[in-house]
Image 1: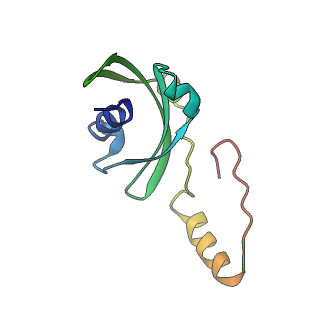
Image 2: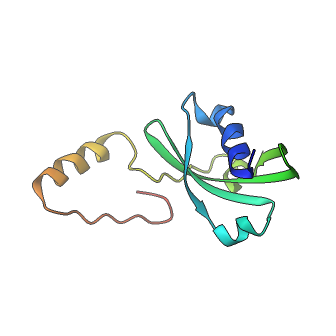
Length: 113
């Protein structure tokens, strides 16, 4: 089992997955990840959401110990940045505007829409 597979399996079994099955759609700092760093930053997508998560891994082979390394888990009360527009009024607005125009420019700043 690779480090990425171990992190995804661990995340899918965690309460953060909320019953959805996530897959990796991107790796941040690929060179750092390939050099054997114990920190792994992944873009995970599942259900109707995508999230960037950071994991700390230790061990080798098929026996990895996986832990959250996200700053958000150490700072309670800080909202999770979203990679997709949040559900609600803004998502409906985006659908209606996209139907009216050939293209739409959105500003995405530090993970907040």
